[in-house]
Image (cartoon, rainbow, N blue to C red):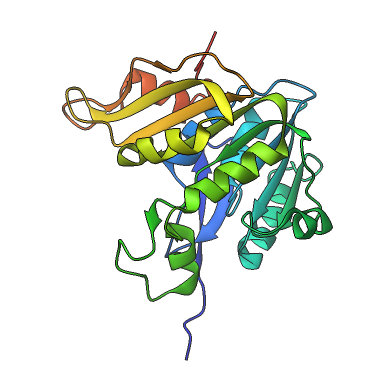
Length: 255
C-alpha cells in the first residue's frame, strides 16, 4: 500500500512567498531563490521556467519583479497542480501559468500543451542534478524523475530552452559545479556572452553550485564572476546570501 503524500508549507524571501511542497523527495530551497534572483526579467517581460516543480523559483521571481509573467512547465502532473495552488495562495495566479509537459518532447506536442517557440524574453531552469546510471535510483518514482535525467539529458534541456527563447533572450540555469563542462557544451552555439557565477559553501571552499547565464545568438566571450560565499565560518549566512535569500535582492550576472 502506497503511503499518502504529506506536505510542508515553506517560506521564501522572508515570508513574501509561501510554497506548499511534498515533505519527502525533491524539495525547493536555496537554489530556487538564487535562480530567481539571477533572472534579469523586467516589467512587461515573459519568462519560462523549465522543470518548475511546485513553483518556488517562479513565485520568488514574480514576488520580486512586478509586471512580469511566468510560464512554468513540469512533467509531473501532481506538481503542476501544486504549483497552480501555490500561485493562487500567493495571489500570483494571474501572472503564473503552469503547463504539464515533458521538455524533451517534440514541439508538436509542446505546442499542443500550450508552449510556444521563440516567445519568451528569459528562460530559466534548475534541472535534475544527476544522470540515470550514475547514481542509485530512488525507490520513489517522482523523486527519481526530479533528481535524475537520461544520460546526456542536459543537451535536450538546452535545446528546449533555446527553442523557446526569443532572439537575444537570456537563459539562466543553476546546477552542481561539476556539471559546468556539460552546461557549457550544451550552451555552445546556442547561447553566448556566458557568465558563470560560483556559489561557495564557505570562504576558501570549492564551489558547490554554479549559476550559468547566456544570451541567445550572442558570440561574445564567456566570463567567470567573483563567487558568492553562502556561510561564515560559524555557519551563519553571509550578508551577501542574506540579501538574496531574505531580502529578495537580485543577482547581476552581466552589466
